[in-house]
Image (cartoon, rainbow, N blue to C red; front, side, top):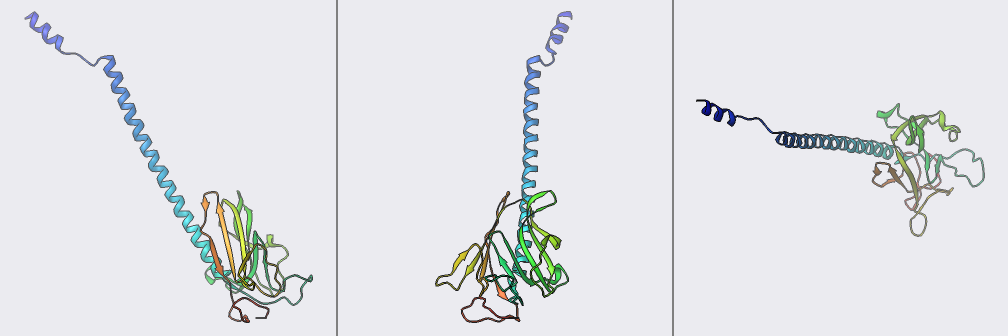
Amino acid sequence: MSSLASRHGGGIRGFTLVEMLVAMALLSLLMLGMVSALRTMAQTEERMDLRSERADEIRIANGFLRATLGRVSMRRMKEVQREGDTPYFFTGQANAVAWVGIMPARHGAGGRYFFRLALEAAQEDPSALVIRFVPWNGGGLPLDWSQAESRVLANRVKSLVLGYEDSRQPAPTWISNWSRVDSLPSRIRIDVETWDGAWPLWVIVMRALPSSERSGGGAFSSGTD
């Protein structure tokens, strides 16, 4: 009996130290894989949210600019301060553009406004695409745009490059600064690049407001509205 008991007792044993270490190593690898998979899922979801947010940002900015910059006033100033200055309520530079257009009713009270599009510092963002606007009062361009209302169209903007099409040339030409005094650009090109990537290139056709006058050639010409 004693020999039988000893044989049965000898057949019952636990895990060895080596087996425990192997099991713990496998378990650690499994946990590491699960944590990595969860992190990847979280990063993917975050990137999708950023892409969706960026797409909404682009869509809203595009719609707003096409609604305001695409319908521009050709009203001329009563007096031009310096010879060679444009008589229109419009200034076009390589990194900023100002004009008189119609504020869409859903964004404000409606009616004619001065607008200005440029890069500015906004809150904690050192470079944002900002649209400023102030009701048009029949006078000249605002002297201090910092006092106008503003909306941020895009954050983390790396660069803004504007181009203006001069269709009165023998071949339509894109220029970086608008200096003609007898007409306005026929189209404006807006190239925005953010730190998250470049936006699609926008080309906005500028059309005169209903009360504006045109001459032949399909480009804006001198006149009153």
